Image (cartoon, rainbow, N blue to C red; front, side):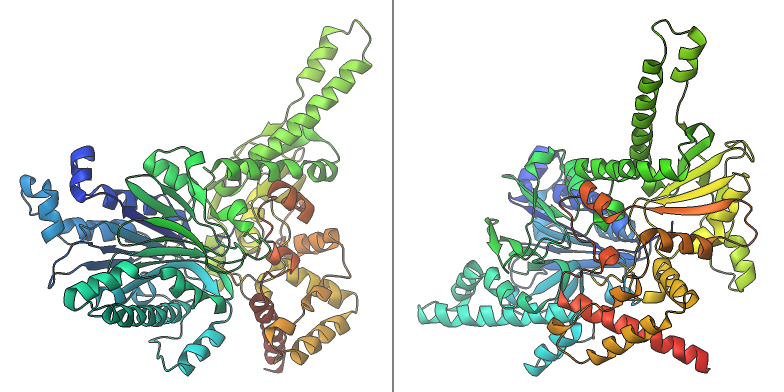
Length: 630
């Protein structure tokens, strides 16, 4: 019920015809620009802290700008960007605005190559300086580079040390700046290699430059840059001469989809946004594979290249549970399946008393899992009805049949998000009192002191909103018992590949396990884990092990769920509160192609993630000691 932040969303549009073509066929040369806007707006869920876009004109003359960028911060950044762009055109006469040749020669952002980005920060760094795309400028078009991405690197320190040793000097110690400099450095080397090659062939002047631009090999640039990158990523880039690329991490942690026809190539972080923006069938859209890049040269010729060897697929399961829009056919079915898989646990928890239980969901992102849960409950009731009818005599009474057939699942809209809490009040008690009113309830949706209440959520990470708002407001309905159901398993470990979950103490499942260890006199386990983590602190990351798993080993999932419910239930709550989690098996059955579950299982796909987990546990223990000492 707490909003998780996720980095980020990308979009690319490469027009494969002259602007006059789109003016003639679609009535505007801005067709590509408009498609970029749609792709970004349809992915607004992926980034609300800022947005940016870049554009390249392919046929600009010397002395004319050919590479443009616009960025903005805030939740309205997309609208602000495109309003600013269109402001350049507002004074034009109708004839000028409909003249594609005039636009191409005169107007900014009237180009054939577009790239957009939506940002959700997972690093705490904010401001316009951290909004993608990032630009690297040069007098040679082929050395101009704009980069954006949906990524987090776990080994920024290693990459920074490597490129610094080569004499480079990144402007900031941030993964995007470092990637920009690394790619830019390799692009410079590629251009210099081609300069020598073409000069040796006798080319000079503008012809020499043209030959260089025709031969740029972005596959070479990517293959000499990306092998060092440890993390989840989709990195996109456009070159001033008209080349472009998008490359995916070898583990397939982050996602990207593309569409190609004879008019356009489009790439985005999510498949349904391409379907919607271009009105094309799902079957025509393809997923970029792990370690693969899509590369287009300055003439628009597309090819796929295997940049890094694919590793064991670990596509992020949170993409399916929560982050991606539910309009994707496969994601919709997977979320329904997550809800269905919880049905046996829910029925057991309510002692199969469907008659006296009301089912609902919070927040809206859990709605599809809710429908799946209802299907599972309906299936159970249908089987129960069959059994009871079969148990009747051959000539059952009308009232007997009516009683059996009237059994139904009671679903209601129990909770409503009422306001977005403002942060102008900082005093703890007053702020907590306001937080309790973020959600409102539908009075009369339960029979007081008679009905149970089952609420399904997509995930329970910190539990803050549950404790400060949800449970207390639901308790006003006077249910006998409240069951909070998570369609995902217990979040036990930090994520370092694009979700803002990076410290141990923010996970309610971790806090529950620590409390259980202390209650049972097993603090020595905590000490041993800390000592093991310290002992491997300076080992190469490839040699590290996950010792933090030992924190959870003494307990069953149910024991941790019980303690979690105790920690999250406000003292004034009258109802008995229980928490039910999805199992790992249930997750994998529902999302078989997205096996990335490290935040649940601790099985990190890369050694960099394991290194940061080790540091996170050390920091947790040492911060705890510091708090005690002070």
